Image (tube, rainbow, N blue to C red; front, side, top):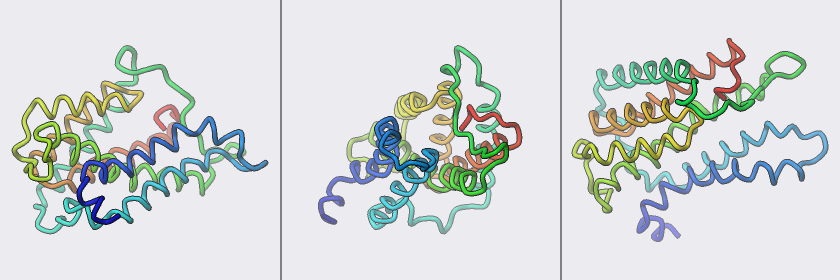
Length: 225
């Protein structure tokens, strides 16, 4: 099993992301069979938990996550700035035709107040799990694979504009705010190219998601969740 995963690095980086999306896609199937009284909002925790377990189980194969030492302070600062810039774009571009129709989103209110467990679960999943899962898939795998199929040999610094544009366009299709998603993909991808390390885009993504969650809780704009 371990050897098979090592021989399929693209699959390895797709599994956590695929599990997260797959459980989300099964939501309409799972809801009718939930036990009476079970709040279906907890299914988000299932998605995040399964994806996190996959990352932990496959950690030994993610060499790009083992190179956190040596990152310049300026790269961390740049990542934080990009995360803030993407956040500003995200909350400003929820307009048609730059976004698909709004949905109800994730609302953690119970009896008119945010439920502590639901809120913590949603924030933790969006801030700590999603950035790792998505950056492993979209930047470490897809972006580099578009540059060359033997993507593990590709230095992020050498990735060309074509791969950045295509991967960002694909990343945009995953999001309701497709144009903001496109800008986010370009920003995170450029940061990966600029720093040559996956952790700065993970941080930028986490800053965006974490502060977006704070914004949602303060404003009640649940459609962003």
